[in-house]
Image (cartoon, rainbow, N blue to C red):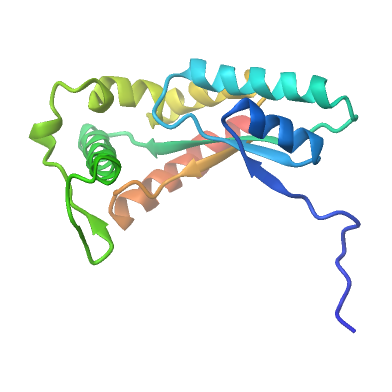
Length: 185
């Protein structure tokens, strides 16, 4: 005789980016988590469009919670800004090595591409990353989050583990909690 769940229905979440996954999630009445990677805000708009299309197609009365995840770093000094940009670029370089099978994995960590080798490559451009990701001062991050809120995103997933050291992650999260979250209460 195991204890019974408190809920009649346990919410199930689906990570979705492609139309077929959105269709599945709506047909099966699942909530949706999407992640535009390092792509611009237009990618988030595309995911919302796909969700809306899947809701209409399912026509079953289900309205999911729509969550969006982004790499996040809140900073108020140039040194912290640079630390965040360097960290995300190194992690992205590690993933490129995995996708290309270009480097070894040692003790579970893929080989890092030196930052100077990433210079000039569009997908590692610091200005693009800072614009597209949830990076910036508290006021900038609030502005960015308000765009997601206006789009219809119900929940935001703060993705902190992107190569920043623990102290920098904690400082960023504290700024997020103290300076950003009050704008959404």
